[in-house]
Image (tube, rainbow, N blue to C red):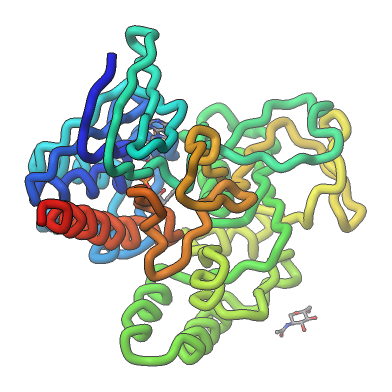
Length: 380
Ligand SMILES: Cc1cc2nc3c(=O)[nH]c(=O)nc-3n(C[C@H](O)[C@H](O)[C@H](O)COP(=O)(O)OP(=O)(O)OC[C@H]3O[C@@H](n4cnc5c(N)ncnc54)[C@H](O)[C@@H]3O)c2cc1C
Ligand SMILES: *[C@@H]1O[C@H](CO)[C@@H](O)[C@H](O)[C@H]1NC(C)=O
């Protein structure tokens, strides 16, 4: 089977859906390929139950569709999924499911090969414009740790974690102190598990309100001033947590987000449990030996389970051969702002600006606009 199209979008997460919707508004034909049996598979299949969007809803809208009235400021997972499903029907986005893209190469046009998982056969698509929208969170990343394969308990990645039901009374080590790790540790505690956290590097801990204040201030005040204010607020609320194993970075939270993509932790109640020592924090793991985990400070503790909240790896470079862009060691396309969404040879990247749904919305509009302009120029 071989099919010609003008625009091919790979991935039906928020980025692919938004790009397709923006193209539909301009009546530009496009095809969306998605490997799973549904859209927004990250949200429907790989996110824990209690997840809410970390940013206030006004920063998490897709183009041309506000959240319905009455939506909570911090949108719960299920409401966000409903919003995405409504978005799809409103803009007639029709992804082809069960299509896993396995290669894309350029020879005047892009030839994209996808495996139809239902029929177990290859399909070929030839397209002028190729939009990569497979996400920054392609697959769970678990770091190499000495002796991890000798661990006698069970190990999972945070993307497979739904809730703590099966962990009652168990000692669980959550590796990673970003937003997922901190929230999972609290969830485990709520389910009656004994949760500990590994905090390898310093993190900023902020409340939802502090982030909101910071986002508003950023419109009027320089970044370093905003950082100083927000850090001061964090110090007032949370104090010095270094005795509990949590260090604050030297650089400010908004600066770090911009420069490295690393988000501050938005506290959902974990800090209180850390202060009461219900949740213990350990430094990096030195090695694992059976059910013993040895930490960098010389301490050892036994665990029955480990959950790795150690982030994700982007998988684009696995199938995108003739890139039109370079890829960094974490698999992310290395594109430069302000045109980070545009590669060479008619290729585009939606959703790789490390700024969540907010960035996705901007990318989708910019890409649809750019393709529209390219088409207008071609016709002259
Ligand atoms: C736990 C968690 C919490 C988050 N919370 C927030 C938040 O609060 N606010 C925020 O703005 N962002 C948040 N994010 C970031 C979030 O990933 C993005 O906002 C958003 O889901 C990314 O959309 P995307 O379309 O770029 O990627 P994804 O949602 O990952 O969608 C990519 C799609 O591409 C498909 N795909 C991948 N490879 C292929 C292939 N080879 N062939 C075909 N299809 C393929 C996947 O199945 C998937 O459906 C969170 C992420 C995680 C993991
Ligand atoms: C925090 O507390 C630790 C240990 O008591 C101390 O060494 C450190 O200087 C304190 N940091 C700040 C910023 O006050």
